[in-house]
Amino acid sequence: MIKQVIKKEWHEFQVLMRNIPSLVTTLFIMSVFAMNLLANKSIDIPWDWLALDCGIIVSWFAFFTMDIITKHYGPKAATQITILAILINLFFCLLLFLGSIIPGMWGESFVDGNESLINSALNATFGGTWYVVLGSTLAFLASAIVNNFSNYGIGKLFKKHPDGFVAYIFRTYVSTALGQFIDNLTFALIVSHLFFGWTLLQCVTCALTGMIVELLCELIFLYPGFAITRRWKKNNVGKEYLKLISEVPDESTDNRN
Image 1 (tube, rainbow, N blue to C red):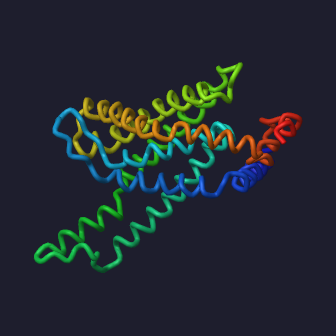
Image 2: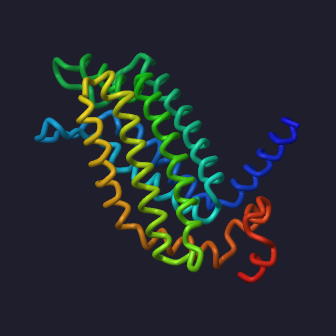
Image 3: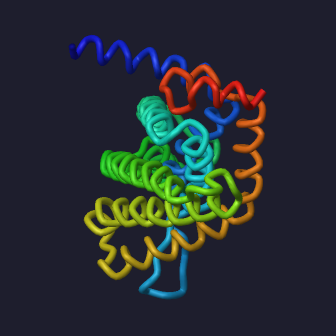
């Protein structure tokens, strides 16, 4: 029984990978990788109660991508792609760690009198630390699950016009707000609070302000995301996968042609 379930899930995943546009998958994985790397750098803020990291400049794109995947393929597909991105990110984190411990000098470390210090700092940045990798992984996984399934659930509330722009706005913004808050807060509590000395107030304000900034960033691409999902539906993108999981009946799919 378990073997059959695993075989079925693996087959669905293989079909999913064939049906999601490769550019979307690539950009999503790259955004996850860049987000976790940039999270190592804090942003200088003139207020003690506010703290942000540079991961904020790219994390919005990961949620933007998850939203369009959820809208068209469903929350399960978006979560599977998220897990794939996390595994690939962990693999490349391992490669960066190996690169950091290989003897040698970074090009940017050649500053008279500070070579060793700068080289060690660069190794630590790219090699990463276990708690940053652990925190970012757990935070993103939790937030992705919340984002994907809340997006799907909110979409189900729109009975008359589930594919309309208003429905897309609500399902995208509410789910992204929840997911971003969970992501920022979880990472802040696991990493920033325990290892960098952030206060609980800083963790909460970081989660809230980060959520707001990322929502503003996603606002720029709100209509393009909606247009992408409409074009996918019109062009029968992912038809094989949608038929396989029976989320789209055959007669409904045929009516799109």
